[in-house]
Length: 281
Image 1 (cartoon, rainbow, N blue to C red):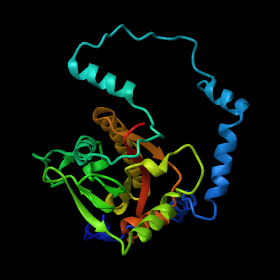
Image 2 (cartoon, rainbow, N blue to C red):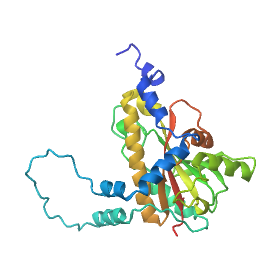
Image 3 (cartoon, rainbow, N blue to C red):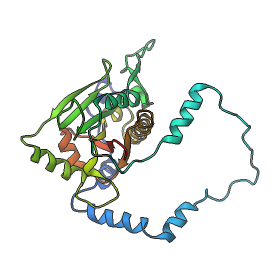
Image 4 (spheres, helix red, strand yellow):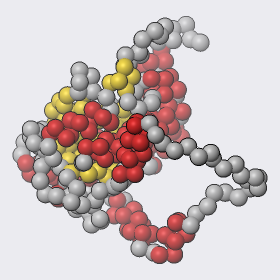
């Protein structure tokens, strides 16, 4: 242990292999079309999709199997969770009307709210939220890119879950045209796929301030941030099912353009997921 452990907070150095992983898994404007063509070709090839649909676990397990006991759901919370999971779906077609601000507020509070203070601990931690976080460090931030939402002008907003939740405008633009161009460059809306961008209400960006976790867990902290982003993505899906909002996680975005759109310039600030929101058609 160093003489001053506070050094860890400010001097985290990730291995070059970890930094390479972060860089190599980004999408750039120059390679987005090639990736889109690959995905499209796979989706349109019946043989490939048949193999995917028929996949099985790796061989080598012992022959014995243990059936699970009958365990009918009876508790209201269990039944509600089952219903939400059954209703969870990716929505790609939207109605061309604004999303109600009240619906957006419900979704954000259900998906990523402050749920409890951290009490009785020897050292202070951030308040607990509605998804698990390695070490209780909560590196994730949510941004909403509003296109058409009642009560919100078009722009980029940071969701702050404390104090019952609020949105803070972090980026506005000199003109509607400049905003539309920034959105198109970040989310590749000109690309032809099965996503109905034109009628969507907005984009939800899940980003990670990696240093919040990596100062403690170093390179392994990147994996923890990815796991947490997946947990929050699923929470958004369940909240969407509960509120009647259509949502769809999307992979067609340019990482560095999304960083620029939400105003992130810091080292190890990375967008990890983008979710399209709107009124389902």
